[in-house]
Image (cartoon, rainbow, N blue to C red; front, side):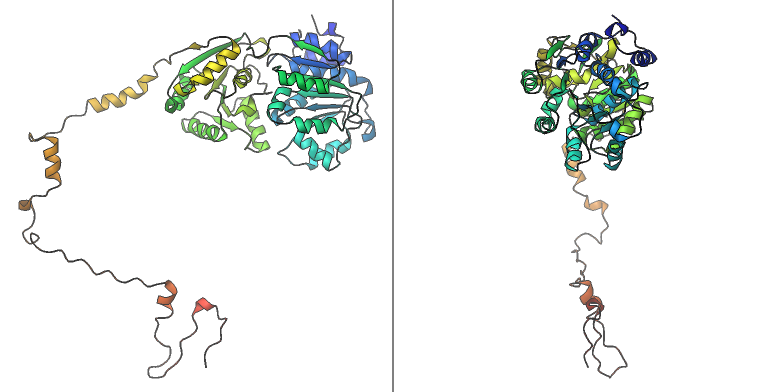
Length: 472
């Protein structure tokens, strides 16, 4: 099967060739013809199998006849709306639209929070056919009347299961109420739970189902390993593995934002280039860190589960679970950042005894036991310190026990002390009485001003600021 056999336009085939792709993935083979036919689709496939191109390519093909080079905004109404759960995923979908639509006269823009709204308003006012957005910021534009959704023909819910977990469903329903009743609906997700199936029944109309692999499975090209280690030694083991395996580049996942910051600081202290990415970081910082990581300027990207969806790093060799996720499905999405598009990858998990329950839940979900590995020469790190302690020469003693020496240490001998000190009582030094306040000492205790013998009232202290008049 080739992309030419799927019926895509020559402009799209040219863009695909520019990217070096020749053969469509299984989800693309099944989904693209259905989308081209105008049918509603619900699709589930493993992460990293090309789901984004599975809906981007046929949407661009369908909108191509309506493309216009006119500068008039009226000739560029919003015809396709793509909703994503995170900013990073929205930016990635927008990049895919721009990449495959480079030879088409179609305009697109991305809308998400964490950045200023005026540039987004300006792009919308200029006219765009495709909008990729997160639900919250899209509703902000709706409230300010800066976006018109009355001509939307195609609605896409990308990573729908994640939007369900993040509580976006009420916002999505509000957005759907603003769209035309007649439209094509596409729902793409990495997993297909029963909740997603219930959601699709309320949005999709007689959808075709595409499921190229059973839910919650990991890609075959990913080698999964577990390194048992005590929780307090995880940082040392991570540094050891980065230097000895070696790990040239990796995304390291933590559970909390504070933990990501702390681990990033520790790695930088060990002179390992690292950057942290999580929801507390500004969007400009997140974008810059991601660009540095893709460019190889930063070798370790420490992230929370915000990066578990949608990040597409070409040929990423390693993913490290510094802490196992509480939700086992998140493990599948985390390690899906490596081994993408049929390439090989390695997923390493540092597991402490306290995480045995999370490990069991993950192995039950993926229906396989993860192989354990023992870090090579990791214990040698502390041996030089132990040898130094062992080689310390013993102290010379006079034969007395440790308790006797301790007792003598705290009981000074009278023969070694000066005679004049023995028997003399200690007289405590007089402690001067401190003034009640700075102002009472410096202002109210001064002698009267003027020559001696002439009575004159004291000046009003500076504390009062000269607000009171002097006495006559």
